Length: 331
Image 1 (cartoon, helix red, strand yellow):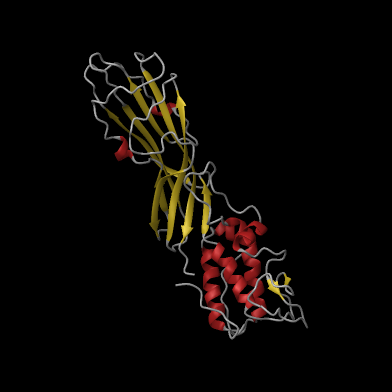
Image 2: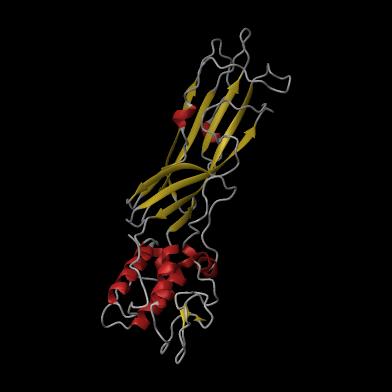
């Protein structure tokens, strides 16, 4: 389901169209927190017979501009980027992303003006641009531009400073390769408490004969909770950018854990869920089931250095960065 079609015969006073736009506008307003709504000065709107079309259009135009920077570019590819998505920096950035690229954004025709020949063309010569004013010539383009802008407002981005930590803990597995050496001590609370939440530790050593390495796996997690969300259908995604820290000059190898992202410094999805819940928790512990299927008989990997008899370890951090909420508004 999308917007009701608007053509040359659509009345610019069509209450049904206005109500559809009001419903879509109100969904976006509801997706802001009460604090945000107060800060930007927007509230839900109810079109009625006693409200003039000019007042309605002006109110929606003003409200869209007011909350533009609370939204984010919905075309931004989340996975594989080296930066996190962010909210629109300016009203102009949001409007440009929506395709309303002219200064003033909204098509208008001043009193005594003449509609462009191709009125469906946003960039047609003859338009003026800006919010509606009294005595403007009105037409269906007013509704179309509102719909175009509202269609851009579907993605919210929350930093983890906005979300709250509702829980935490650690998982670990030990695989025994026979005469196990003493593994490096792991103290969970020695890891940073802000910004880094998922940790793996690999420990390797040699046995002769044959040569194997074993893995001690640790995964720390934090559980992030967003509350006061709109009840509309949405997909909530927790993103992180993994980084690798080599503690003991450990040689590089791919141990084949099946996650496919361990050594990439680009965004990955740590958790994702689709829901209508108003409170949503995401856990930043990726694919633990894939990590914990390690055989106790794994061939020693080829290394370029001669230090293959030493005990080495490396910590892999998945840095939780932001939570993205993509709403499935219709329209």
